[in-house]
Amino acid sequence: MITSVEVKTKRSSPRARLSVVALLTLVLPAMGLAAENTCPAHLFVIERSKNLNIVAYDANIGPDGALNPSEPVVAYWLLNGDKNRREELTAIERDRAYGVEVTPGDAPGTFKMVFKAQRKRHFTIREHNGCPVVMIPIHGRNAILRKLYVKSKETLVLPKVDYIEFFGEDADTGEPLHQKFKPGK
Image (cartoon, rainbow, N blue to C red; front, top):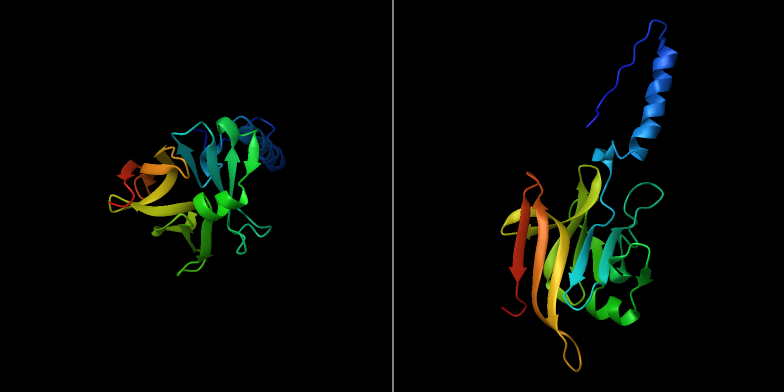
């Protein structure tokens, strides 16, 4: 990873060095070389056993750079997992299955989040290393949630959830974490 560049020539002036630095700040991100300060595209996603459609949950950042307090999280479908095939959740999906309820958190700049379909597990939205993240305990450790996987069986009325897997990383060490949860147990 390139962290700093110093350019010296026989005739390099402070203005020339400043021009090079300005140019590099534009070029390096375009080349993917300055990705350490970028945030993930999504807070987290839900993958399902049913098909390849993914539910993406994104931070809704306002003009001031902070989470929009009236709607901090936006959820939508990525059809077949394709980022270019986006579709909004239906009213039923928002109210019953994949919708979330977000309220102000206990600490400034944080929010509490629960899934409308499963209100027992609480999530916290906060900033971590300059990026909004969803925090949950995974095996008792403070983790950044990256993905949920839902294994379900189709029934006549509604799908029956067999289990949910939580995938994340330890907020302090970055170590990958995983936990399987069986609803009703």
